[in-house]
Image 1 (cartoon, rainbow, N blue to C red):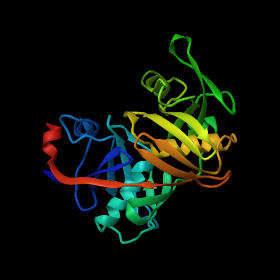
Image 2 (image 1 turned 180 degrees about the vertical axis):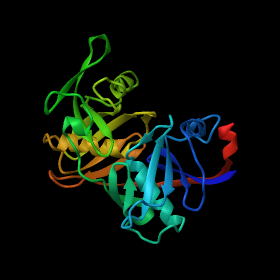
Image 3 (image 1 turned 90 degrees about the vertical axis):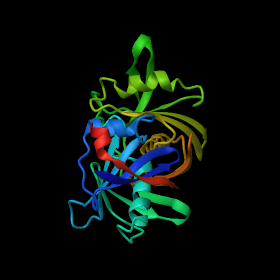
Length: 281
């Protein structure tokens, strides 16, 4: 069975996008893991699936699977690529659309030159909303790690859970060691994305993100939103900022009590077809 797909990326955070409106297929976790393999498969950080919506006032249903086959609630870079994909594939002629995710409705808006602006919804901070195990809400939490290490973190849910810590220099941050410990920490029952942020000035920050089920990626849209919001509400960043990731920059805007707006680029890499039986054998 041949399936058509498109390879895309948002700032180097790469995706395979599959239209399951005009095509039909069932992709289980093992199949997705094999597809995601960088040497024996197509290779991607996340698989994005286009499906018909469950509600009459929504344009599409958008499902996201990490490279380990786990389904997640939201992906900021992914939703920008998703919006461009459905428009260029003529699944819609709208430039503003409503898209159903596991985390709720997001509203991407197509701009010029492959840029997309997205209403990412309202950030959540309560421990039970992350989810995060804590007796009460605090401005920062101490997270105990292996070998007597500990970190001060903020927790934010931007459709998926994020732990944000501020570091003096992202280039020297021990992401490879600390990222997996934070991701699978017992206080995060559904695991978490770990963000390491360096404040440059009030309108600029640098960020690295260790994504649950993937590892460190070149960019993370929800991670940029979470990090920006975390710093904004503590007065460390202005209400509109540029977040610099390894793959490029995202523009994030937020005011307390409002939704978060994310703007950034997308890119098509190539289109192809694969035999689904190869990954299911």
